[in-house]
Image 1 (cartoon, rainbow, N blue to C red):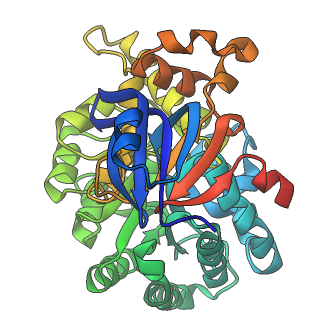
Image 2 (cartoon, rainbow, N blue to C red):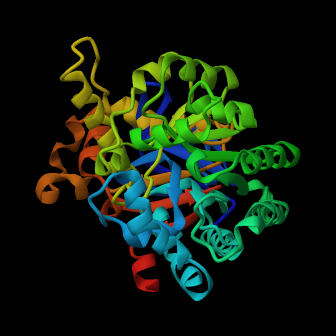
Image 3 (cartoon, rainbow, N blue to C red):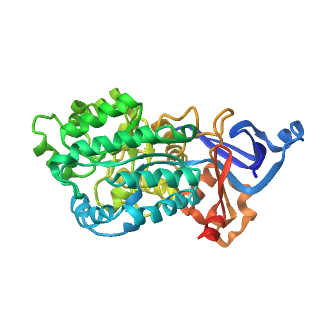
Length: 442
């Protein structure tokens, strides 16, 4: 059994601000009752606290846990499927997969999904389930057993839904089931599990459903998550469905969906008014660059949203994204900015340290959790990952590690990182993944 107090030694790296890295080569973190009790030089801390059991993980790097702000539980089995754009891709490849995500299939796949997340170093995740109540229930049960920090919501749709309910019953049942799930799971496990009311997007939701979701979220103190301005065909459909709205974002404004507890996925095709409205509402954005590239949806104007003061995190967005690997998502975010800078000469490329911030402290701010997680500050809950740096080096030659600074190490992880290098994953000071453990269990 893991002690309530222990220490970890490694190369400490975190990003308290956008682009600002802190690094400590011979660093150590003291963990007490699930929180970070002390941070400093290993030799100093060991001298001060000889009573503590210190675990030497050198030459591993110790980072804050990675945060995935947007992904889909039922879709993981459909990664790399289809070549079309968003709306036909949903109809042809995704809705059939989500339609089947209930009963035994959901119970089998949900635990595997969350194990894969922690194997990739993700400690916090925001997730869409399928439209079925049981798909969300089993998601929460799997997240609870896994030990990950999770915000999950039942997908809500009452236009063009793939379920078997009569259309006139979908609205009331979707709201009823979502409320029931929220009352059951929101803030469960001492706040580790939380609920998000999850209307899919304006193309698949009536105003009544979106207003109902917003009212329930406000009443119950829960999150809201939805998709916004991902694809140009989607924008055209929203324009025809909601002729009275000034733009796509105005639809959500009118329905009460823009709140400080709202996370908006994608946000590629926004005009200046929409960006200002999101910033004024203090809503946050999940940037999903891997998915946007796969579906040819467009290149998000990250710089404009950041300049407006919007909190932005990253999302794997499977099955649009190919894997639950946030290092890969960071790499895609850098590549998107480089692609834009080739045609926008005044646009500066995204640095590895900035992409890393988006996947850690930026993600924590996006989810309203920056006081609790996201950096290696004393008092925060000990959501941490240890990464095997030699495993990422060509020929696994660790001789050159001493020459690498924090930015070099972060870049190494972004360009070569993945589950093969995750040594340990901790949530609230509890080790929920150790290399080889999941493989042995499977």
